Image 1 (cartoon, rainbow, N blue to C red):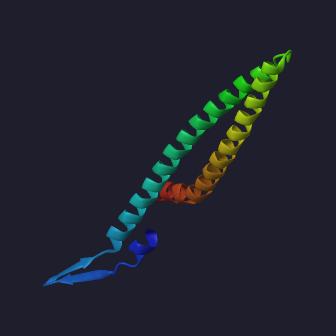
Image 2 (spheres, helix red, strand yellow):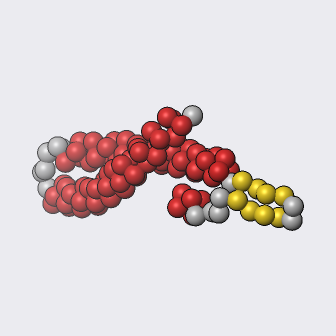
Image 3 (cartoon, helix red, strand yellow):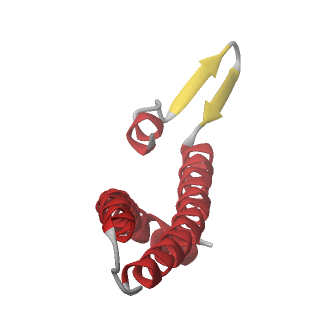
Length: 117
C-alpha cells in the first residue's frame, strides 16, 4: 500500500489550482502504518487467546491420559485422546507460525509509526 501512495504524483493541476501531495502522502503512509500496527496487535491478541485455549485443552487431555488403563475402553479413550493431541499440535503449529510472521512483518512498521508520531 505504501508503494502505491509513494507513486502518487508530487502535484496535481486542476484548473488554476495546484495541489501538492507531499503532506497527504506522509499522512496516508502514517495512517496505513498505524492501521497495520492496530491490525497486528488485534490479531496477536486473538492468537494469544486461541493459544491459551489450546493449552488448556492439552492440559485436560493430559489429565485423561494419566488415568490408569484397566480395560479395553480405557485403551480406546487413550487412543482417542492421542488423536486429539495430534490435531491440537497441528493447530498450534499453524497459529504460532502465523503469529510469528505477523509479528516480524509489523514490528518495523509499528516502530516507524511510533517514531513519526
